[in-house]
Length: 349
Image: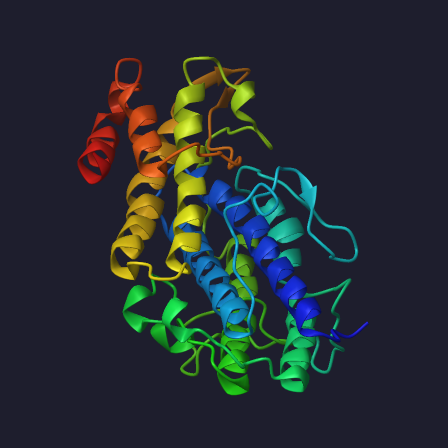
């Protein structure tokens, strides 16, 4: 069924956000399981995850630009693994798994499967994300819901997004949504960086950046070597770990949840976008990454090591102060975390 109303459009854009929030942790989990975080394999997966975060921001802009409200920090948006990829047919189970050529081929490349040229839009149950976004594009053209785009609340300053290795600026960045053309531009970025269409391999005009599907194909086919993989569990939960490790995994969950809380704050009226962007990038790369990698050095028994679990963490007060409180209690049992704890305390105390 096509998208008939603006409310239905907003529901589908919120679903697009949930799809992005379903895929980001599974890509990050595979990346964190790699023994060498500086390897090309890790950087290739990171390049996909960074662009998925960009796509999440573009979905937020699309919601605001068409009269809706983004909401990413929510137990309804942050998934619990394993789960079926929402509305995807055939059913595709998304899991947190150690990196392997099999998981990349059988899950990641299925998620990022390109639509065939001329494939019909699919608004409700979709075979490819390209067809799902095509249904949103069709609705945007027909409804033109841009009476109050609220550009001042959107995450649209080009300086707030910088490509990483294996990405290029020419494949697209942040776009403020205020009319049909800018909405279609944002969705073209999402589609062509991600799945692409047909056998089109590149996300940029100069053919320097592969689409996500073909980035993953390089790993699945062994063109880029995965290297050593740490024996993390499949779909772990904090309660699966020994008691002394659980606070570290809780810190990782709080940091990931904080990233999404910050995104909601960026879209709030009167937000200090510069300060919040600093928190966003500082938390994702500078704090969550080191905590996640530290977890994979901790033995949990049964030939497994710990890992981030990407569970929803509910803040009861100021998230920054809560994260400082969690971090300060860790250094006695985990002296290896002292540099990260120092950064957290320095940033938010």
